[in-house]
Length: 191
Image 1: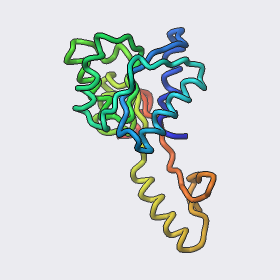
Image 2: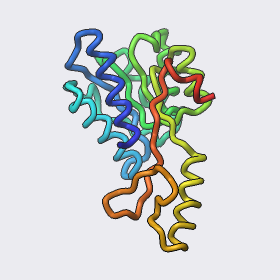
Image 3: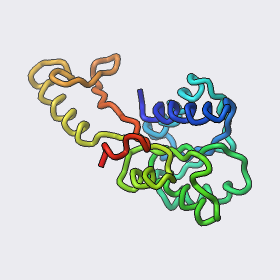
Image 4: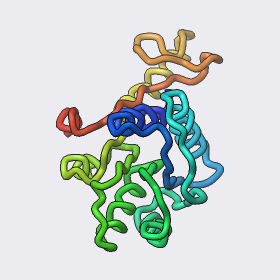
């Protein structure tokens, strides 16, 4: 499961509580063509669909290059001219750019769920403040440990994930360090 899938599981719960199964979204993409951008975007849209939500783009995806200021500039013209139910972002920086853009236009960022990825310090604070609905923790320490452990395992002729509880891809050559959803209910666990 990739990080976008957690966004696509969180949002249906939010909308189904409101009795909505058809939504429109604004999408803040990272660097176009980059694997993480492609996977994060595809996995959130698939998870929305798999969870019974018909999600329609309210505007063309915005390629904001994982940058807060770029996201803020790109989304600002759409905030008062486009109908949208949520803002989906490939990372926290762009999600926080959307929060700032809404605030600058006198809009309440709590009025629609804004979701990010990375569980950065600013992203976690925004969850506590209620301006970011959720984010996804990407375990940098786990990735570092997994990389070193995989190298040692390969040198010793073992399976790449031997001695860990990390899964591998179908080839056995890629070790997946799991992502974790971060919401108001568990944000304190990530401090």
